[in-house]
Length: 230
Picture 1 (tube, rainbow, N blue to C red):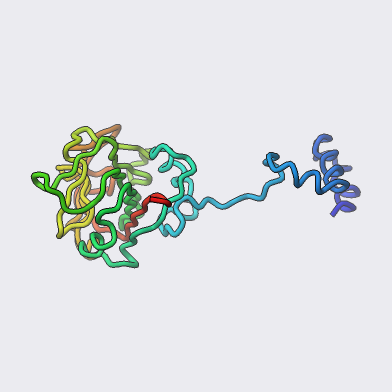
Picture 2: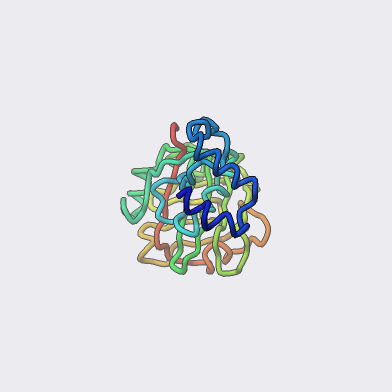
């Protein structure tokens, strides 16, 4: 309290004079300070909730929420969870039931060894009339957030735009004609998911093992988000 501050803290000289004076002003005129909402020092710290409901981007991984928004191009965008494999089911049918027709989306995948990767699509998942069920995009990209190669978070842009994403009723999300990233049905119980990066996507340190350590992999969980208001 004010007495403790005045008798025990301030005499140590550890607190700069400016802050000491501000402390006394606040004690004398608290209402005036409440009006100064632009003063960040007086604002409560707000937890990061850009991807509320995520069970992957949590604890020491929450900083990645800001990075995904940076890559998306809207730093303050809040996202809505539309699908989580561990909650809605790991089958391809469960993915399509919840995600077909939804855009834009972030797909965030956690591997069995703690890897976190995924992709962004500005076009919806679902059936198309295009040959081979590929859906073109100008903005789609893949990314690694954590990997076993000590590579910093990296974005892999689409380079073969006609093959950005692919619809297949027996698979989960598919990015690229490689496929650069394919999440298999029941991906938590098999090794059918794979990454053939770089093919339709490319970037620094791109390889078939950068996203999930190996070409084939199992998935611990994955989530799909769409912007709030979409």
